[in-house]
Length: 564
Image (cartoon, rainbow, N blue to C red; front, side, top):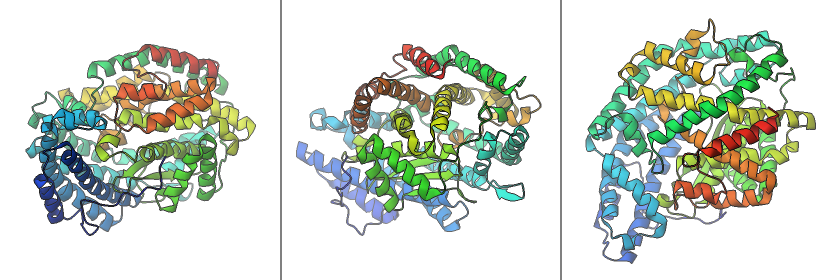
Protein backbone atom coordinates (compact mmCIF):
# COMPACT_ATOMS: atom_id res chain seq x y z
CA UNK A 1 0.00 0.00 0.00
CA UNK A 2 1.58 3.26 -1.16
CA UNK A 3 0.55 6.00 1.26
CA UNK A 4 3.38 8.41 0.52
CA UNK A 5 2.99 9.27 -3.15
CA UNK A 6 1.46 12.68 -3.78
CA UNK A 7 -0.66 13.35 -6.83
CA UNK A 8 -0.29 17.06 -7.63
CA UNK A 9 -2.43 18.69 -10.27
CA UNK A 10 -1.00 18.52 -13.78
CA UNK A 11 -3.93 19.67 -15.88
CA UNK A 12 -5.59 22.07 -13.44
CA UNK A 13 -3.74 24.87 -11.69
CA UNK A 14 -3.55 24.83 -7.90
CA UNK A 15 -5.69 27.99 -7.87
CA UNK A 16 -8.58 26.48 -9.83
CA UNK A 17 -11.63 26.45 -7.56
CA UNK A 18 -13.62 23.42 -8.66
CA UNK A 19 -16.86 24.53 -7.05
CA UNK A 20 -16.89 27.74 -9.12
CA UNK A 21 -19.11 27.25 -12.21
CA UNK A 22 -16.90 29.44 -14.41
CA UNK A 23 -13.77 27.51 -13.47
CA UNK A 24 -15.53 24.20 -14.04
CA UNK A 25 -16.75 25.26 -17.49
CA UNK A 26 -13.27 26.41 -18.44
CA UNK A 27 -11.74 23.10 -17.36
CA UNK A 28 -14.21 21.09 -19.41
CA UNK A 29 -13.72 23.38 -22.41
CA UNK A 30 -10.01 22.60 -22.29
CA UNK A 31 -10.77 18.88 -22.05
CA UNK A 32 -13.01 19.19 -25.11
CA UNK A 33 -10.19 20.83 -27.06
CA UNK A 34 -7.56 18.21 -26.24
CA UNK A 35 -6.55 16.09 -29.25
CA UNK A 36 -7.23 12.35 -29.10
CA UNK A 37 -5.71 11.19 -32.36
CA UNK A 38 -3.09 8.83 -30.93
CA UNK A 39 -2.87 6.31 -28.12
CA UNK A 40 -0.51 8.61 -26.20
CA UNK A 41 -2.85 11.59 -26.61
CA UNK A 42 -5.76 9.45 -25.42
CA UNK A 43 -3.85 8.45 -22.28
CA UNK A 44 -3.07 12.12 -21.57
CA UNK A 45 -6.73 13.06 -22.00
CA UNK A 46 -7.89 10.24 -19.70
CA UNK A 47 -5.49 11.44 -16.99
CA UNK A 48 -6.75 15.01 -17.36
CA UNK A 49 -10.40 13.94 -17.21
CA UNK A 50 -9.72 11.86 -14.09
CA UNK A 51 -8.05 14.87 -12.48
CA UNK A 52 -11.02 17.14 -13.15
CA UNK A 53 -13.56 14.57 -11.90
CA UNK A 54 -11.46 13.92 -8.80
CA UNK A 55 -11.26 17.62 -7.94
CA UNK A 56 -15.03 18.05 -8.25
CA UNK A 57 -15.84 14.85 -6.34
CA UNK A 58 -13.58 15.87 -3.48
CA UNK A 59 -15.45 19.16 -3.13
CA UNK A 60 -18.70 17.21 -2.84
CA UNK A 61 -17.30 14.69 -0.36
CA UNK A 62 -15.86 17.37 1.90
CA UNK A 63 -19.08 19.39 1.80
CA UNK A 64 -21.06 16.29 2.80
CA UNK A 65 -18.58 15.51 5.59
CA UNK A 66 -18.95 19.04 6.98
CA UNK A 67 -22.74 18.98 6.73
CA UNK A 68 -23.12 15.61 8.49
CA UNK A 69 -20.70 16.62 11.25
CA UNK A 70 -23.13 19.36 12.28
CA UNK A 71 -26.56 19.37 10.65
CA UNK A 72 -27.33 22.61 12.51
CA UNK A 73 -24.43 24.49 10.88
CA UNK A 74 -26.14 26.81 8.38
CA UNK A 75 -22.92 27.63 6.54
CA UNK A 76 -22.11 23.95 6.03
CA UNK A 77 -25.67 23.33 4.90
CA UNK A 78 -25.49 26.14 2.34
CA UNK A 79 -22.13 24.91 1.07
CA UNK A 80 -23.57 21.45 0.51
CA UNK A 81 -26.66 22.96 -1.11
CA UNK A 82 -24.40 24.83 -3.56
CA UNK A 83 -22.68 21.56 -4.50
CA UNK A 84 -26.03 19.79 -4.89
CA UNK A 85 -27.96 22.48 -6.73
CA UNK A 86 -25.24 24.17 -8.80
CA UNK A 87 -22.05 22.12 -9.12
CA UNK A 88 -23.35 18.58 -9.63
CA UNK A 89 -25.99 19.43 -12.28
CA UNK A 90 -23.39 21.43 -14.21
CA UNK A 91 -20.79 18.69 -14.01
CA UNK A 92 -23.37 16.06 -14.94
CA UNK A 93 -24.13 17.95 -18.14
CA UNK A 94 -20.50 18.66 -19.04
CA UNK A 95 -19.38 15.15 -18.18
CA UNK A 96 -21.81 13.64 -20.65
CA UNK A 97 -19.76 15.00 -23.54
CA UNK A 98 -16.62 13.46 -22.02
CA UNK A 99 -18.32 10.09 -21.64
CA UNK A 100 -19.35 10.12 -25.29
CA UNK A 101 -15.77 10.94 -26.32
CA UNK A 102 -14.59 8.06 -24.17
CA UNK A 103 -17.05 5.64 -25.75
CA UNK A 104 -16.04 6.77 -29.27
CA UNK A 105 -12.38 5.86 -28.74
CA UNK A 106 -10.91 2.90 -30.63
CA UNK A 107 -10.86 -0.05 -28.24
CA UNK A 108 -7.16 -0.68 -28.93
CA UNK A 109 -6.29 2.74 -27.44
CA UNK A 110 -8.09 2.15 -24.16
CA UNK A 111 -5.84 0.91 -21.34
CA UNK A 112 -6.70 -2.58 -20.09
CA UNK A 113 -7.46 -1.15 -16.63
CA UNK A 114 -10.38 0.79 -18.13
CA UNK A 115 -12.34 -2.14 -19.62
CA UNK A 116 -14.88 -2.41 -16.77
CA UNK A 117 -14.99 1.38 -16.40
CA UNK A 118 -15.97 1.64 -20.06
CA UNK A 119 -18.89 -0.72 -19.52
CA UNK A 120 -19.99 1.40 -16.54
CA UNK A 121 -19.74 4.56 -18.64
CA UNK A 122 -21.76 2.95 -21.42
CA UNK A 123 -24.64 2.29 -19.03
CA UNK A 124 -24.37 5.83 -17.66
CA UNK A 125 -24.60 7.22 -21.20
CA UNK A 126 -27.63 5.04 -21.93
CA UNK A 127 -29.66 6.43 -19.02
CA UNK A 128 -28.44 10.04 -19.20
CA UNK A 129 -31.08 12.64 -19.96
CA UNK A 130 -30.41 16.36 -19.66
CA UNK A 131 -33.89 16.92 -18.24
CA UNK A 132 -32.94 14.67 -15.31
CA UNK A 133 -30.14 16.94 -14.11
CA UNK A 134 -32.39 19.30 -12.10
CA UNK A 135 -34.22 16.25 -10.73
CA UNK A 136 -30.95 14.71 -9.53
CA UNK A 137 -30.07 18.02 -7.89
CA UNK A 138 -33.47 18.10 -6.20
CA UNK A 139 -32.94 14.53 -5.01
CA UNK A 140 -29.66 15.52 -3.34
CA UNK A 141 -31.46 18.29 -1.48
CA UNK A 142 -34.23 15.92 -0.37
CA UNK A 143 -31.57 13.56 0.98
CA UNK A 144 -30.10 16.39 3.05
CA UNK A 145 -33.59 16.92 4.53
CA UNK A 146 -33.48 13.36 5.85
CA UNK A 147 -30.16 14.15 7.53
CA UNK A 148 -31.62 17.28 9.10
CA UNK A 149 -34.67 15.41 10.42
CA UNK A 150 -32.74 12.46 11.82
CA UNK A 151 -29.85 14.62 13.02
CA UNK A 152 -32.28 16.57 15.18
CA UNK A 153 -33.61 13.59 17.12
CA UNK A 154 -33.23 14.08 20.88
CA UNK A 155 -35.29 13.05 23.89
CA UNK A 156 -35.17 13.11 27.67
CA UNK A 157 -34.07 9.84 29.25
CA UNK A 158 -33.44 9.56 32.98
CA UNK A 159 -33.07 13.32 33.22
CA UNK A 160 -30.63 13.68 30.32
CA UNK A 161 -30.93 14.81 26.71
CA UNK A 162 -29.97 11.85 24.54
CA UNK A 163 -29.72 10.96 20.86
CA UNK A 164 -30.92 7.59 19.49
CA UNK A 165 -27.34 6.32 19.45
CA UNK A 166 -26.88 7.18 23.13
CA UNK A 167 -29.68 4.73 23.98
CA UNK A 168 -27.96 1.77 22.33
CA UNK A 169 -26.04 0.71 25.46
CA UNK A 170 -29.30 0.39 27.40
CA UNK A 171 -30.63 -2.10 24.83
CA UNK A 172 -27.94 -4.53 26.00
CA UNK A 173 -28.78 -4.15 29.70
CA UNK A 174 -29.83 -7.32 31.60
CA UNK A 175 -32.66 -5.21 33.07
CA UNK A 176 -35.63 -5.95 30.77
CA UNK A 177 -37.68 -3.01 32.04
CA UNK A 178 -34.80 -0.64 31.27
CA UNK A 179 -34.35 -2.17 27.82
CA UNK A 180 -38.01 -1.69 26.97
CA UNK A 181 -37.92 1.88 28.23
CA UNK A 182 -34.85 2.63 26.10
CA UNK A 183 -36.33 0.95 23.02
CA UNK A 184 -39.58 2.90 23.31
CA UNK A 185 -37.70 6.16 23.83
CA UNK A 186 -35.59 5.43 20.76
CA UNK A 187 -38.41 4.56 18.37
CA UNK A 188 -40.61 7.37 19.70
CA UNK A 189 -38.14 9.94 18.36
CA UNK A 190 -38.60 8.59 14.85
CA UNK A 191 -42.33 8.03 15.35
CA UNK A 192 -42.78 11.72 16.13
CA UNK A 193 -41.43 12.49 12.64
CA UNK A 194 -42.94 9.55 10.80
CA UNK A 195 -45.40 11.76 8.91
CA UNK A 196 -42.58 14.05 7.80
CA UNK A 197 -40.59 11.03 6.69
CA UNK A 198 -43.61 9.67 4.80
CA UNK A 199 -44.05 12.96 2.98
CA UNK A 200 -40.34 13.18 2.23
CA UNK A 201 -40.28 9.67 0.79
CA UNK A 202 -43.32 10.35 -1.37
CA UNK A 203 -41.52 13.33 -2.90
CA UNK A 204 -38.52 11.09 -3.53
CA UNK A 205 -40.71 8.33 -4.98
CA UNK A 206 -42.37 10.72 -7.40
CA UNK A 207 -39.04 12.21 -8.41
CA UNK A 208 -37.39 8.81 -8.89
CA UNK A 209 -40.27 7.60 -11.04
CA UNK A 210 -39.79 10.70 -13.22
CA UNK A 211 -36.07 9.95 -13.54
CA UNK A 212 -36.91 6.48 -14.85
CA UNK A 213 -39.64 7.68 -17.21
CA UNK A 214 -37.38 10.36 -18.68
CA UNK A 215 -34.72 7.70 -19.29
CA UNK A 216 -37.27 5.50 -21.10
CA UNK A 217 -37.06 2.82 -18.43
CA UNK A 218 -40.03 0.71 -17.30
CA UNK A 219 -39.59 1.69 -13.65
CA UNK A 220 -37.11 3.18 -11.22
CA UNK A 221 -35.90 -0.27 -10.20
CA UNK A 222 -34.60 -0.97 -13.72
CA UNK A 223 -33.17 2.55 -13.94
CA UNK A 224 -31.36 2.21 -10.63
CA UNK A 225 -29.84 -1.16 -11.54
CA UNK A 226 -28.13 0.59 -14.44
CA UNK A 227 -27.25 3.66 -12.39
CA UNK A 228 -25.57 1.37 -9.82
CA UNK A 229 -23.70 -0.41 -12.65
CA UNK A 230 -24.95 -3.85 -11.67
CA UNK A 231 -23.16 -5.41 -14.62
CA UNK A 232 -22.84 -8.91 -13.17
CA UNK A 233 -26.39 -9.71 -12.02
CA UNK A 234 -30.08 -9.04 -12.59
CA UNK A 235 -33.28 -8.57 -10.59
CA UNK A 236 -33.92 -12.28 -11.12
CA UNK A 237 -30.61 -13.06 -9.39
CA UNK A 238 -31.40 -10.89 -6.36
CA UNK A 239 -34.83 -12.50 -6.01
CA UNK A 240 -33.19 -15.94 -6.06
CA UNK A 241 -30.78 -14.72 -3.37
CA UNK A 242 -33.66 -13.57 -1.16
CA UNK A 243 -35.43 -16.89 -1.69
CA UNK A 244 -32.26 -18.76 -0.66
CA UNK A 245 -31.98 -16.64 2.49
CA UNK A 246 -35.58 -17.50 3.34
CA UNK A 247 -34.88 -21.20 2.73
CA UNK A 248 -31.53 -21.61 4.51
CA UNK A 249 -30.89 -18.67 6.83
CA UNK A 250 -34.30 -17.87 8.33
CA UNK A 251 -34.66 -21.40 9.83
CA UNK A 252 -31.14 -21.20 11.27
CA UNK A 253 -31.87 -17.83 12.89
CA UNK A 254 -35.26 -19.07 14.13
CA UNK A 255 -33.48 -21.95 15.88
CA UNK A 256 -31.00 -19.49 17.37
CA UNK A 257 -33.82 -17.26 18.62
CA UNK A 258 -35.72 -20.19 20.10
CA UNK A 259 -32.63 -21.03 22.13
CA UNK A 260 -32.38 -17.37 23.21
CA UNK A 261 -35.99 -17.39 24.35
CA UNK A 262 -35.43 -20.53 26.42
CA UNK A 263 -32.29 -19.13 28.05
CA UNK A 264 -34.08 -15.92 28.96
CA UNK A 265 -37.14 -17.77 30.27
CA UNK A 266 -39.51 -15.86 27.98
CA UNK A 267 -42.65 -16.93 26.16
CA UNK A 268 -42.00 -14.49 23.31
CA UNK A 269 -39.19 -12.21 22.18
CA UNK A 270 -39.97 -8.52 21.89
CA UNK A 271 -37.75 -6.10 19.92
CA UNK A 272 -35.85 -5.14 23.08
CA UNK A 273 -34.94 -8.81 23.76
CA UNK A 274 -32.91 -9.53 20.61
CA UNK A 275 -29.49 -7.96 21.31
CA UNK A 276 -29.02 -8.42 25.06
CA UNK A 277 -26.82 -11.28 26.21
CA UNK A 278 -29.28 -14.17 26.82
CA UNK A 279 -27.35 -15.35 29.88
CA UNK A 280 -27.71 -11.95 31.53
CA UNK A 281 -24.08 -10.86 31.24
CA UNK A 282 -23.41 -7.14 31.35
CA UNK A 283 -22.13 -5.66 28.06
CA UNK A 284 -18.33 -5.33 28.16
CA UNK A 285 -16.72 -1.93 28.51
CA UNK A 286 -14.09 -2.09 25.80
CA UNK A 287 -12.67 1.45 25.92
CA UNK A 288 -12.47 4.42 28.26
CA UNK A 289 -12.57 7.31 25.79
CA UNK A 290 -12.15 7.97 22.07
CA UNK A 291 -8.36 8.03 22.28
CA UNK A 292 -8.43 4.60 23.90
CA UNK A 293 -10.83 3.32 21.23
CA UNK A 294 -8.52 4.53 18.47
CA UNK A 295 -5.42 3.04 20.10
CA UNK A 296 -7.08 -0.35 20.54
CA UNK A 297 -8.43 -0.38 16.99
CA UNK A 298 -4.99 0.59 15.66
CA UNK A 299 -3.32 -2.21 17.63
CA UNK A 300 -5.72 -4.78 16.20
CA UNK A 301 -5.21 -3.43 12.67
CA UNK A 302 -1.45 -3.69 13.14
CA UNK A 303 -1.81 -7.32 14.21
CA UNK A 304 -3.65 -8.11 10.98
CA UNK A 305 -1.20 -6.13 8.83
CA UNK A 306 1.17 -3.29 9.72
CA UNK A 307 0.11 -1.22 6.71
CA UNK A 308 -3.45 -1.13 8.02
CA UNK A 309 -2.36 0.63 11.22
CA UNK A 310 -0.22 3.05 9.21
CA UNK A 311 -3.26 4.00 7.12
CA UNK A 312 -5.39 4.46 10.26
CA UNK A 313 -3.01 6.89 11.94
CA UNK A 314 -2.48 8.78 8.68
CA UNK A 315 -6.22 9.52 8.51
CA UNK A 316 -6.26 10.50 12.17
CA UNK A 317 -3.32 12.85 11.72
CA UNK A 318 -5.10 14.58 8.85
CA UNK A 319 -8.25 15.14 10.91
CA UNK A 320 -10.20 12.56 8.93
CA UNK A 321 -11.57 10.56 11.88
CA UNK A 322 -14.71 12.01 13.50
CA UNK A 323 -15.99 9.36 15.90
CA UNK A 324 -17.77 11.31 18.66
CA UNK A 325 -21.55 11.20 19.05
CA UNK A 326 -23.01 14.64 19.76
CA UNK A 327 -26.28 16.56 19.32
CA UNK A 328 -26.77 17.85 15.79
CA UNK A 329 -24.49 15.26 14.26
CA UNK A 330 -26.03 13.04 11.58
CA UNK A 331 -26.65 9.45 12.73
CA UNK A 332 -24.80 6.37 11.58
CA UNK A 333 -21.29 5.73 10.37
CA UNK A 334 -19.64 5.89 6.98
CA UNK A 335 -16.32 6.09 5.19
CA UNK A 336 -15.79 8.29 2.17
CA UNK A 337 -12.93 9.08 -0.16
CA UNK A 338 -11.40 12.43 -1.00
CA UNK A 339 -10.70 11.67 -4.63
CA UNK A 340 -8.14 14.35 -5.40
CA UNK A 341 -6.02 13.72 -2.31
CA UNK A 342 -6.63 9.99 -2.83
CA UNK A 343 -7.31 9.86 0.88
CA UNK A 344 -10.09 8.38 3.03
CA UNK A 345 -12.06 9.43 6.11
CA UNK A 346 -14.22 7.80 8.78
CA UNK A 347 -17.38 9.26 10.35
CA UNK A 348 -18.93 7.60 13.40
CA UNK A 349 -21.09 8.01 16.48
CA UNK A 350 -19.33 6.21 19.33
CA UNK A 351 -21.38 5.91 22.52
CA UNK A 352 -19.36 3.51 24.65
CA UNK A 353 -20.45 0.07 23.43
CA UNK A 354 -18.52 -2.81 21.91
CA UNK A 355 -20.41 -2.04 18.70
CA UNK A 356 -18.29 1.10 18.40
CA UNK A 357 -15.18 -1.03 18.09
CA UNK A 358 -16.78 -3.26 15.44
CA UNK A 359 -18.01 -0.22 13.54
CA UNK A 360 -14.59 1.40 13.57
CA UNK A 361 -12.94 -1.76 12.24
CA UNK A 362 -15.70 -2.03 9.60
CA UNK A 363 -15.24 1.55 8.39
CA UNK A 364 -11.47 1.09 8.52
CA UNK A 365 -11.96 -1.72 6.00
CA UNK A 366 -13.61 0.72 3.61
CA UNK A 367 -10.83 3.26 4.11
CA UNK A 368 -8.09 0.67 3.64
CA UNK A 369 -9.81 -0.39 0.41
CA UNK A 370 -9.75 3.21 -0.83
CA UNK A 371 -6.09 3.59 0.06
CA UNK A 372 -5.08 0.19 -1.33
CA UNK A 373 -6.03 1.18 -4.87
CA UNK A 374 -5.12 4.89 -4.71
CA UNK A 375 -2.40 4.32 -7.33
CA UNK A 376 -5.09 3.78 -9.99
CA UNK A 377 -6.77 6.61 -11.94
CA UNK A 378 -10.28 7.52 -10.78
CA UNK A 379 -12.25 5.51 -13.34
CA UNK A 380 -10.19 2.40 -12.61
CA UNK A 381 -10.35 2.64 -8.83
CA UNK A 382 -14.09 3.29 -8.42
CA UNK A 383 -14.67 -0.23 -7.11
CA UNK A 384 -18.12 -1.85 -7.18
CA UNK A 385 -20.25 -1.37 -4.09
CA UNK A 386 -20.76 -5.11 -3.66
CA UNK A 387 -17.05 -5.61 -3.17
CA UNK A 388 -16.63 -2.48 -1.06
CA UNK A 389 -18.57 -4.24 1.67
CA UNK A 390 -16.39 -7.35 1.38
CA UNK A 391 -13.48 -5.10 2.36
CA UNK A 392 -15.23 -3.85 5.49
CA UNK A 393 -17.02 -6.99 6.63
CA UNK A 394 -14.02 -9.26 6.09
CA UNK A 395 -11.81 -6.99 8.19
CA UNK A 396 -14.22 -7.31 11.12
CA UNK A 397 -13.85 -11.09 10.94
CA UNK A 398 -10.09 -11.05 10.35
CA UNK A 399 -9.82 -9.00 13.57
CA UNK A 400 -11.19 -11.84 15.71
CA UNK A 401 -7.83 -13.53 16.55
CA UNK A 402 -6.62 -10.26 18.11
CA UNK A 403 -9.60 -9.44 20.28
CA UNK A 404 -7.51 -9.89 23.41
CA UNK A 405 -6.70 -6.20 22.91
CA UNK A 406 -10.29 -5.26 23.75
CA UNK A 407 -11.87 -8.24 25.54
CA UNK A 408 -11.02 -10.54 28.43
CA UNK A 409 -11.17 -14.26 27.69
CA UNK A 410 -14.75 -14.73 28.89
CA UNK A 411 -16.08 -11.74 26.95
CA UNK A 412 -14.04 -12.68 23.91
CA UNK A 413 -15.76 -16.05 23.64
CA UNK A 414 -19.20 -14.60 24.29
CA UNK A 415 -18.83 -11.67 21.88
CA UNK A 416 -17.34 -14.03 19.30
CA UNK A 417 -20.49 -16.14 19.28
CA UNK A 418 -22.61 -12.99 19.21
CA UNK A 419 -20.75 -11.71 16.14
CA UNK A 420 -21.31 -14.97 14.27
CA UNK A 421 -24.98 -14.91 15.23
CA UNK A 422 -25.21 -11.36 13.88
CA UNK A 423 -23.80 -12.52 10.54
CA UNK A 424 -26.82 -14.77 10.12
CA UNK A 425 -29.34 -12.41 11.75
CA UNK A 426 -28.46 -9.64 9.32
CA UNK A 427 -29.26 -11.54 6.12
CA UNK A 428 -33.06 -11.84 6.66
CA UNK A 429 -33.27 -8.11 7.43
CA UNK A 430 -31.24 -7.35 4.31
CA UNK A 431 -33.59 -9.49 2.22
CA UNK A 432 -36.56 -7.75 3.83
CA UNK A 433 -35.32 -4.26 2.94
CA UNK A 434 -34.37 -5.32 -0.59
CA UNK A 435 -37.75 -6.94 -1.21
CA UNK A 436 -39.52 -3.85 0.16
CA UNK A 437 -37.71 -1.59 -2.28
CA UNK A 438 -38.33 -4.04 -5.12
CA UNK A 439 -42.04 -3.70 -4.34
CA UNK A 440 -42.25 0.03 -3.61
CA UNK A 441 -40.75 1.07 -6.96
CA UNK A 442 -42.84 -1.30 -9.09
CA UNK A 443 -46.24 -1.16 -7.38
CA UNK A 444 -48.69 1.79 -7.41
CA UNK A 445 -49.52 1.07 -3.75
CA UNK A 446 -45.97 2.17 -2.90
CA UNK A 447 -47.28 5.73 -2.87
CA UNK A 448 -49.69 4.94 0.00
CA UNK A 449 -48.33 5.31 3.57
CA UNK A 450 -50.66 2.66 4.99
CA UNK A 451 -49.79 0.19 2.22
CA UNK A 452 -46.08 0.68 2.85
CA UNK A 453 -46.50 -0.03 6.55
CA UNK A 454 -48.65 -3.10 5.92
CA UNK A 455 -46.26 -4.48 3.33
CA UNK A 456 -43.34 -4.02 5.72
CA UNK A 457 -45.20 -5.85 8.49
CA UNK A 458 -45.90 -8.71 6.08
CA UNK A 459 -42.21 -8.96 5.25
CA UNK A 460 -41.49 -9.06 8.97
CA UNK A 461 -43.72 -12.12 9.32
CA UNK A 462 -41.86 -13.75 6.42
CA UNK A 463 -38.25 -13.00 7.31
CA UNK A 464 -38.23 -12.23 11.05
CA UNK A 465 -41.15 -14.27 12.45
CA UNK A 466 -39.43 -14.83 15.78
CA UNK A 467 -39.87 -11.22 17.04
CA UNK A 468 -43.25 -10.38 18.60
CA UNK A 469 -44.61 -6.92 17.74
CA UNK A 470 -48.00 -7.37 19.43
CA UNK A 471 -49.33 -3.92 20.43
CA UNK A 472 -46.27 -2.37 18.74
CA UNK A 473 -47.56 -2.47 15.17
CA UNK A 474 -47.37 1.31 14.74
CA UNK A 475 -43.65 1.19 15.48
CA UNK A 476 -43.04 -1.92 13.41
CA UNK A 477 -44.77 -0.37 10.41
CA UNK A 478 -42.32 2.52 10.20
CA UNK A 479 -39.33 0.17 10.11
CA UNK A 480 -38.88 0.70 6.37
CA UNK A 481 -38.02 4.38 7.05
CA UNK A 482 -34.38 3.45 6.98
CA UNK A 483 -31.46 5.70 6.06
CA UNK A 484 -30.56 3.69 2.94
CA UNK A 485 -34.10 3.90 1.53
CA UNK A 486 -33.83 7.67 1.55
CA UNK A 487 -30.18 8.33 0.78
CA UNK A 488 -28.96 5.38 -1.31
CA UNK A 489 -32.02 3.64 -2.77
CA UNK A 490 -31.60 -0.07 -3.56
CA UNK A 491 -28.11 -0.02 -2.04
CA UNK A 492 -28.62 -2.79 0.49
CA UNK A 493 -28.46 -6.13 -1.27
CA UNK A 494 -24.77 -5.28 -1.71
CA UNK A 495 -24.33 -5.85 2.03
CA UNK A 496 -25.80 -9.32 1.74
CA UNK A 497 -23.73 -10.26 -1.30
CA UNK A 498 -20.62 -8.98 0.45
CA UNK A 499 -21.45 -10.65 3.75
CA UNK A 500 -21.54 -14.06 2.12
CA UNK A 501 -18.16 -13.19 0.60
CA UNK A 502 -16.80 -12.10 3.98
CA UNK A 503 -18.09 -15.27 5.64
CA UNK A 504 -16.08 -17.24 3.09
CA UNK A 505 -12.97 -15.13 3.81
CA UNK A 506 -13.48 -15.93 7.49
CA UNK A 507 -13.88 -19.67 6.91
CA UNK A 508 -10.74 -19.59 4.74
CA UNK A 509 -8.87 -17.77 7.52
CA UNK A 510 -9.62 -20.60 9.93
CA UNK A 511 -7.75 -22.93 7.58
CA UNK A 512 -4.88 -20.62 6.52
CA UNK A 513 -4.93 -17.13 8.07
CA UNK A 514 -1.85 -15.65 6.28
CA UNK A 515 -3.16 -16.80 2.90
CA UNK A 516 -6.62 -15.36 3.59
CA UNK A 517 -5.11 -11.97 4.51
CA UNK A 518 -2.81 -12.06 1.47
CA UNK A 519 -5.72 -12.75 -0.91
CA UNK A 520 -7.81 -10.06 0.81
CA UNK A 521 -5.06 -7.45 0.44
CA UNK A 522 -4.49 -8.32 -3.21
CA UNK A 523 -8.17 -8.04 -4.09
CA UNK A 524 -8.34 -4.55 -2.54
CA UNK A 525 -5.62 -3.27 -4.89
CA UNK A 526 -7.62 -4.10 -8.02
CA UNK A 527 -10.19 -1.30 -7.82
CA UNK A 528 -12.51 -1.87 -10.73
CA UNK A 529 -9.92 -3.22 -13.16
CA UNK A 530 -11.60 -6.65 -13.24
CA UNK A 531 -15.22 -7.81 -13.09
CA UNK A 532 -17.15 -8.28 -9.85
CA UNK A 533 -16.96 -12.11 -9.91
CA UNK A 534 -13.21 -11.81 -10.60
CA UNK A 535 -12.78 -9.56 -7.56
CA UNK A 536 -14.40 -12.22 -5.38
CA UNK A 537 -12.17 -14.84 -6.98
CA UNK A 538 -9.08 -12.72 -6.26
CA UNK A 539 -10.09 -12.71 -2.58
CA UNK A 540 -10.27 -16.51 -2.67
CA UNK A 541 -14.08 -16.69 -2.49
CA UNK A 542 -17.11 -17.17 -4.74
CA UNK A 543 -19.68 -14.61 -5.93
CA UNK A 544 -22.91 -15.88 -4.35
CA UNK A 545 -25.30 -14.64 -7.03
CA UNK A 546 -23.61 -16.89 -9.57
CA UNK A 547 -22.82 -19.64 -7.05
CA UNK A 548 -26.01 -19.95 -4.95
CA UNK A 549 -24.84 -23.17 -3.30
CA UNK A 550 -22.32 -21.09 -1.34
CA UNK A 551 -25.03 -19.65 0.94
CA UNK A 552 -26.14 -23.07 2.16
CA UNK A 553 -22.53 -24.08 2.81
CA UNK A 554 -21.47 -20.99 4.79
CA UNK A 555 -24.73 -21.00 6.75
CA UNK A 556 -23.92 -24.55 7.87
CA UNK A 557 -20.30 -23.61 8.67
CA UNK A 558 -21.28 -20.60 10.79
CA UNK A 559 -24.08 -22.58 12.49
CA UNK A 560 -21.55 -25.23 13.54
CA UNK A 561 -19.32 -22.58 15.10
CA UNK A 562 -22.31 -21.20 17.01
CA UNK A 563 -23.19 -24.79 17.98
CA UNK A 564 -26.68 -24.68 16.53
